[in-house]
Length: 195
Image (cartoon, rainbow, N blue to C red; front, side):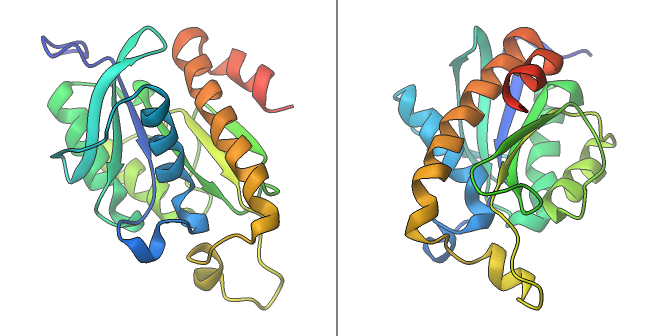
């Protein structure tokens, strides 16, 4: 059966991160923080629990969207995303993933229609569980650690205060980019947001 079941879910938006208070404001939680801001803007709580996720379903960009925060920890994000996509018969091309990217400067966002995991274990796991790398994504730049600095400590560390305003702006633009992807497609979103 194709996507668009009686449930009507047309898109899945997955914001990636790690559950738990100790990770709440870390660089690896850019996707969670963006999903929270999106839900806040639409006055919806991501308080339903299923698909190993905190989620809710609401109208966004003229589409019925399931917005989710996988609770599996980052490296197993695909378990949650894959389960929801199969349940609602949503094709990979309509699974939009928002996540952190160390290869982008702090606060920069980049839209991609598909591609490899690029070393990101959450994306690697989603590719494995969807059986495809052809799903759109919005990356949020966190900057990279200095050479010699531990990568795990970097991504699970909190950005300094001086970066937080740029990151909050990036979350807002990531939401706008997601809306553009859903309404007009990845090419338009790339033209508008990858500048």
